Image (cartoon, rainbow, N blue to C red; front, top):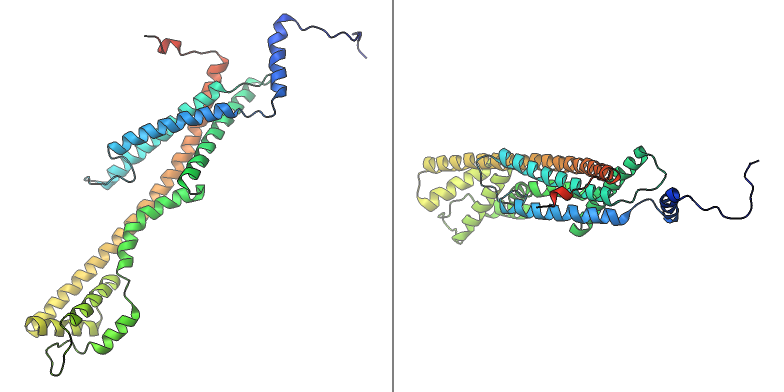
Length: 305
């Protein structure tokens, strides 16, 4: 029961409640609490800042595609990481601030709930930016970090794979038809370039495996002695020196490939960590913008000269 008589006549709200009633009516008419125009505006601001600062970084050599020619690769990677981190944090913080400042606050919510909704809008801004970036570049979210690893290890893998391109059939044919390597032997009419092609394939196999087989070593000694006129001991000494250099080259290729792989893993980890830091920056910027919106804090003093 109530003490108010229902006369059928609508009561007129007080003048002080007119604004509140209008806000409640506007909030109830909205189909969602997500303010997409504010999110899109913040995402545009964040994208513009990232583009400008990224272009400036590329001009001074701070990018993944920049040719490195410094004294220390570690220093270059640290500088690049700090620069990318600064771009991500500043762009998402400013974009989140714009989103929080422009977001329309729903009526009848507590300050704590308003802050959570502002921060959630910042996270949506962050997620939308990553999805749009993935769509533009044509890769999925899960391939972004993988691309960094593949790019960093590509050079080392190409160097190692190029040495493994020998056809096993050619290797067996060479072993059957090359003889003992004495190109000046009686009755041998092999073309002049035939031993060179075989020697090239032997060297390529030595680069790939880091060693020269015993029968290949004998063949190289005979070819070198018959082609250059060196004494057998001198030819053998030269072949041993070449085999030693092939082992050193093979070790260098493996070391470079391993270094590139480790560098790619570190870059992928730093990329993922930077993205997460960007999410925190977007949340912080959005909550700060919402707080300034509620407290009516202006920046007019900064725009007056």
